[in-house]
Length: 330
Image (spheres, helix red, strand yellow):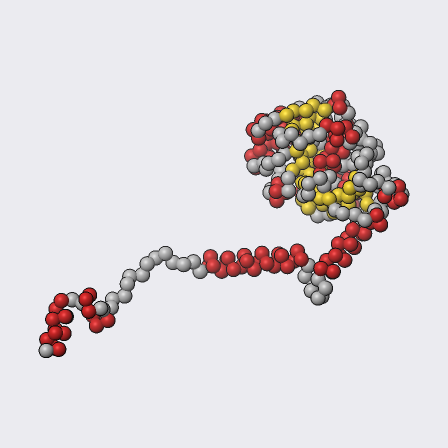
């Protein structure tokens, strides 16, 4: 009964969720999959990874999702998710695509179609045509610029038409703009100490902490989902090993370290954090600006007040007045 009510609620907020037969694919993370209706991202939608920091793992996570669609990922995948036999179309407008990294994530080289474009117009056209093709497994692109509403809506409709998932890696500035994406992941790198690396036991690729800590080039990505059509904001910490394996980490050690750093940065006992004080500063500035705008300086000129003849300088007084003054003095 509860499951039926959940599906009805999801159908009201997002009509595409109403069809349970919609194919889904995994993100490669058990935690991220649990946030999504049906346990994965849907085909026929646009999904965005926002790179909040350079080298934070947004590109890696998107390529791992593409490997999950193909069924060739190094990561164990949920058996309920269907795989696609088509290729992955890579639209590379900025020349940032690195084929060995995609192969390391589990995407076979023979299933990559690399399209190098030189301008925005060609990139949007190529994305649109690839998304409309149902024989394509996925369309991947790292966009160095923002999309306007018209192009974003165009790509969304193209993905729905071909039932092809679009996997877009976006810049941090794009994360502050409206989007037609079904799911938007914000990814940034965080420093990690060895004692903070605690894998979750329910992770599909869980390793003992000692085995996971032996990696020297281990990256920890902080992933948040502030925008989703059916869920509230959530966050997770993922460990990315050099062999492109994802490991879900316990978030409590990282959150505890963050709270300790905030408390040390406010030793006087100020309960407001640095973010709150910054927000207050912006709020005060906005209030001051609003007050100035509420009392604009009038551009209308008032007519000059008429001065009494006795208040004017002698050389500006009328001639008859000067003559009267001479007579009075004589």
